[in-house]
Length: 385
Ligand code: KIV
Ligand code: ZN
View 1: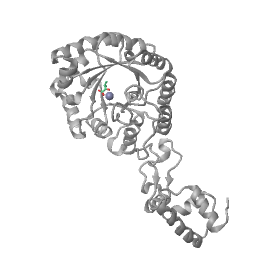
View 2: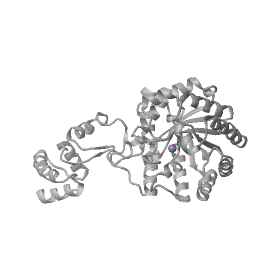
View 3: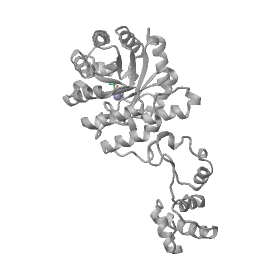
View 4: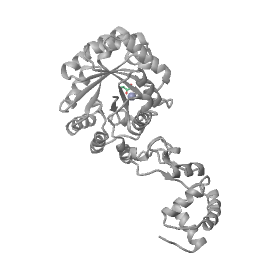
């Protein structure tokens, strides 16, 4: 079983234009619960009074999922995060500290020894407050792997129950990440007793591929967001990852607790709340993801859906696929559309109509239902149905 850690309300909210107010976060969190995510990262409680309130409120509202708050590896953040999540049925503290040379030198101005000491001190401190502790090594994929093993060993000894290996800047490639995780698994004492989490950013468009490669290497938790929103180019998209696991169950042999029929509702709700539209070619939830335009494909799908569809639209909560009429469409799709609109035509009429349809589709990108009605009225002067 792969645990799904949803960070739409924390990392997702860091996406420009995606901030949400309290009532929007509550609506979204309730939907995430219907979707069946295992962990909801509700926010970064110490980052603002507003974030604190929303983490606190979500901790009250959410009943099934674990509720996490992010915290830097400092006492003040951990105290505030714990105050915000303590009333949750299942609270989690998510403590992070950067481990790459570049971050340690320029951002933290700390040595490796100082980083290890801080992890030991504050992960233990967090553990004294809460049983469920996740430790993230920020910028893990640009960190020295031997050092990273010491980092995770320290975090596990101090009480971490999940260790997270983020690709903070979306830098790693799938094979590389796979090997990296294997090395960490082999070099870190105690790792077999904790969840291994991955958190991939999409700067090179590899976030989902990297997460899948990580699962093959033994990751047991994946961090992701609805519609893939998140810092810069976003995070791994929950719907893509989950549907890849479900569609290729034959290959990955892993389940999730996600109720995939709630995917469309979750995606639409987020888009509605933030006002950020989904690109039409976005896998799974884009307008074109289950639309067929070419005649050959339309003919195939009309005869047997699985000829050109690897997923059933109903499995993501979409009523049905759509056949889009355009210049590549054929007679089968045109007849199907005419029948759907209530017209009954014979083969000769279809031939005639198809010529008109092709003329129109050469000048129009998409032929809509209204265009078909107009052709019917003009050419045949009869409207049925
Ligand atoms: O991208 C990242 O490294 C993060 C951590 C705080 C987990 O968001
Ligand atoms: Zn992130």
